[in-house]
Image (cartoon, rainbow, N blue to C red; front, side, top):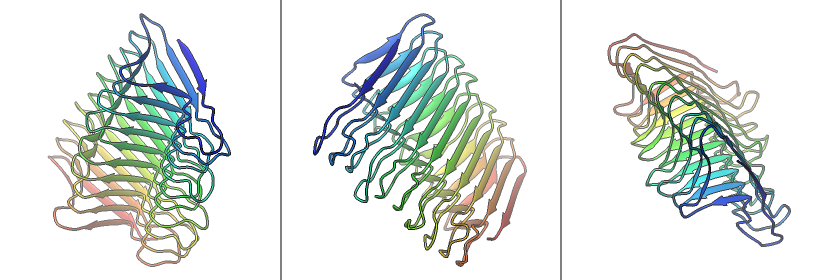
Length: 350
């Protein structure tokens, strides 16, 4: 099954969506059939927002139900409005998945101009568990690039109230790059809030994030940000977790952290799995400070919970500003630890 859609619209027109699956609608293939869905949001050059590439909501489903693969690719529209996200999953039960094959989702945010904000590459959001997931032993690959607007929060991949997961021995790979223009908070990968997870049942989990921003960018362009109780990057079985983040920002931009774990957020591995976290602060060559390599605060946790080892390595950013620490732990309960394995922490100030 192959589905391709492009949204229309001009001027102040909103929600001109490339491919829209809602209210328990489905795009599926049976047996060994594959599913390919490609959508481009509309209203290029207009002012209205919400021009999504692919939108799955209200228990909508895109899936190869048997052994075939599922691929979803979306590009947000090029308007000056907000919320021109590449791929959005929202609402209880909304899913991109498979019965046993691999699942890949890639999204590029749109937007244009200074007022265009919140243009995510891929967003998974639901209090009821929207998700990108595989069945059987299928692997899951998610990649997102933040939008081209100059407003705030051009995020590569955002998981808030949903999950990215793989069944069986399937691996999970997530790669996010923040938008390249001058707003605040152009995170590479953002996992936020209760029941927000990137996880596996028994396969390795790898998350890579690159914060971004231009010479006139604001602060806090983090590579990877895990924030809030219930927000976690983790694994099942004895699988390893590898997290690599690089802060962005330029010029006077400050607080561009490579890997930031806060407010009881967690990066963990279960069983005998190991945890490796590597972070590099951003704004090399700029003047802003506090570009930390790895920052764990507010009861954040990095730990192999079982018998595996935990390794954290951080390098502060190369700006001329102050406090570019390699690794910082601050606040009650903030921990780098293990359930029984070795723990190593290395940091180099910038």
